[in-house]
Each structure stands twice: as structure tokens, then as C-alpha cells.
Amino acid sequence: METHRVWDNKVEMMKNAKEKLRVIFDSNAFFTPLQFKIDIFEELKTLLKRNFEPILLPQVKRELEALMEKGGPKMRREAAYALKIAEKCKLVEVDVDGDPDDVILEVASRWRSPVFTNDKALRKRLRDINVPVIYVRQKSRLEIDGGYEIV
Image (cartoon, rainbow, N blue to C red):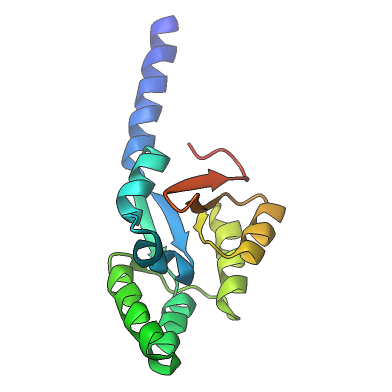
């Protein structure tokens, strides 16, 4: 009996290791490598201790494109770099309309997925609905806060 329980746990752990955790990125997450010299994908891998799939929502991509077109010269360069980093993410169409923050809230709540953002107001709104938030801590590393347990 004990052998079956141990085996079932191993099988469950192997399934979880293969399943990728979806992490939704806010636009400001893509500026982290420029601002803090952090490799966000490597740091996420270390922080989460499992496979993950970086998710880019169309509203967030449009926000980055708007910054690239309408920002000042420095912002244009940074937004172009942010869009280059965003290419590593999977672009996922969703049936939610609104501003990027509202869409992120809705999708994260539905999917029960953590969100990578440094926006304090969005972080608070996400924590209020028990969604884990990944953010830059002490300008040197990523940290996860709040929400349900990510297994």
C-alpha cells in the first residue's frame, strides 16, 4: 500500500515537472533587463524551480508598440528592446477587452497564473484577488509574493 502511494506521488511530480506554468508578463517586466541588468528568464527559472511559459497578451504588446511610436528618443529605444525581449514570449489571444491591467487581472484570475509586474497598483489589485505576483526586489533579484501556492 505504501509503495503505491510513493509511486503515485512520483508520477504526479513528474507530470507537474513536464507541465509548464504560464506566467503573464506586464509591459514593465520587459524593461527589467535594461533597468536592473537582470536576465528575467533565467531568474524566473530559478525562482519558480520548474518549467514555465512566458505569456504576452496582445494588449500588453500594443502598449509596448505605442511607447515605441510615441515616446521620446530614449523611451523609443527602450521600448524597441522590450519588444525584442517580448518575442521570447508566447502571444496568446484572449476574449477580454479593456486596458492592459484589467485584461491581465481577468486572465490571471481565470488561469490561476502568476503575473510578472513591477507596477505597485497592479500588484496590489492582483494580491487582492489572491494572484501571485513576481516583481523585482532590491534592484537585484526577482521575488514572488501573495496568492495561492504554485506547485
